[in-house]
Image 1 (tube, one colour):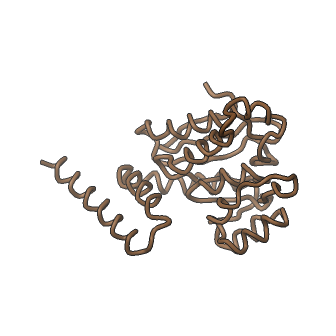
Image 2 (cartoon, one colour):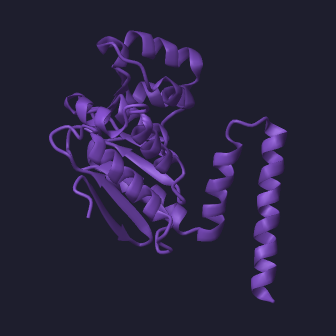
Length: 240
């Protein structure tokens, strides 16, 4: 059983809690558990949607555990960033839509994890930022760019400035900013609406959207049409 990720399922919605006090700093074990848990959600037919949250009342994820640098280097001398990429990809390619419930600061790796979710709901206490440049590192620019575009990303990247949930929502990256005490109910409400849909269509739709995101619009639309044809063919076969 994972030590730092807790999972529960209710009404076809899985809630995945990041639980590594005091600030949910990401180390090699957390990355391995993220890969295991989010990949595993796709194997459970009872899971139609997921919420990604924090057990802390003050922080979502403060970023990489800097004390774990030696641990990461031992994991792979040639490519010590691979575990982080695998964890991010597990969230992005989770078979069901993932709703991030961001209760506090999501910094560095924490921002990267949030950016991989399908929908973002944030508490009024949430904040986001990439502190890497300020400590002589790089990373996360591509993930923030996915949320707000290249020019706004570069200003935040090069200044290492934190941005509030309200400001980030104004840039279109966050679906809802809510009072802190309403965060989980809002995230679960969205996940519940998704879970009420046809689970096969939702899973195929998630795969389709991931494939078309960076494509020219008509190429993307052709792929969506192909997925629709596959769904129809599958339903015809099952009804015969």
